Length: 511
Image 1: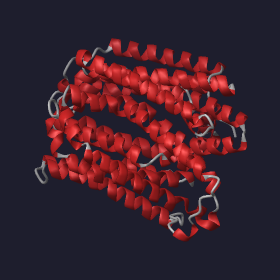
Image 2: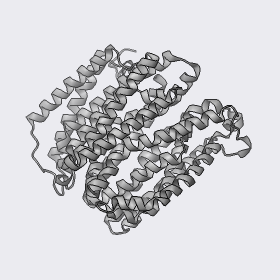
Image 3: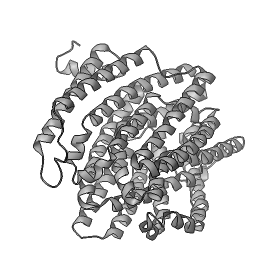
Image 4: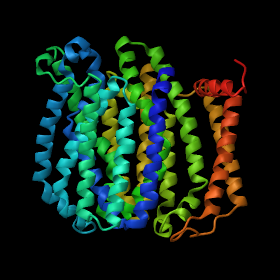
């Protein structure tokens, strides 16, 4: 786990710079210069392309991590595994892309009533899907070589700076809405090309067909695994994207736009998990190959504890100041409708983080079929919940439906790992962590009660220094209290191990 923490540190820093840029885009530039319908249209196009890209990869997004140890051979360019993967996903793009085009009339009919504007832009879905797919494959390849910093630089920062530039260009009338959307599409292609250039400079962009070799005994195993991954991809789409897609279908693009902003705020808490999971997945693959179940259990517990702590304090910081966020947002009165979406999505993501790396362990195990079957089952639950709740509760109903599926999914996965392997993510430190988070939350709520927020203080223009100052001192107070007791109670050896060198440098701790 120490390796995971060290390798993910730089990536996490870049990720949070990206979060800052994303927040600036979604919470300032978008609501200031775009209306909810246009924001919803962008979100819907991205959601459809991301969903389609899961299928077009034909399961290779998971198979790359699982089977890489069997191809690993640097002098032989890892037996051409990268080129083989690119060939497979190209076939996937042709196959599923053809199906998508064939059923275009169905998609247009679904959205014709509430979100008719999207039907003019289906032509960009396949190019956007292909560029997202290529970038994802190259990111996984970089991750397998423990190179995740450039991934974060391009995805979290490069794409968001480009999006900011496109938004400002649109606001100034330099480009129209078509130019904005096609520019967004092209940014993914540029990002993929830059990542390919980086891998080439590192000497690991292996594209020599002479080295391609897939052992005969491995072929049926990989084919079966990838087939299950395709099946599981349907569940991933349902669980991760169904709320936004169904909102566009049942409520319209404006609701989708408002939801996307609130959803972003709620998912900020899981950013650290992404960096940790990138490295942890590779370590889990090697642990499974060596049958080192003790290492799996230790990694699972440490990831769960640290993710619970980090995700918990971020959720507290966000929720105790959510009214300030909407007060500061341009046209915040329009987007305040999504306030409870933030809480529902934040709680779901925190619970998911607190359950460690159960998904990664199962997907890289001989029991991966369980994960996929349960995803499909819970996907049906999510679809049904959204279908029933969105017409009644709107945005909050979509968030509640998504949260329900995530909670049930984690309970199933946790119970399965405990039953099959005797692995579970909790120990006595978990109780301390929960006590600390509850105490800090109580203090945060007390601070907010003593300084009640006035509605709609940040309606139009201008910088509200009073609100910014209040957000700063409340946030600093909550975070300082959390760090103090976290360090004093020694809840996480990994976090204390990162703080100790800093204290030694400034003389607060003896060498």
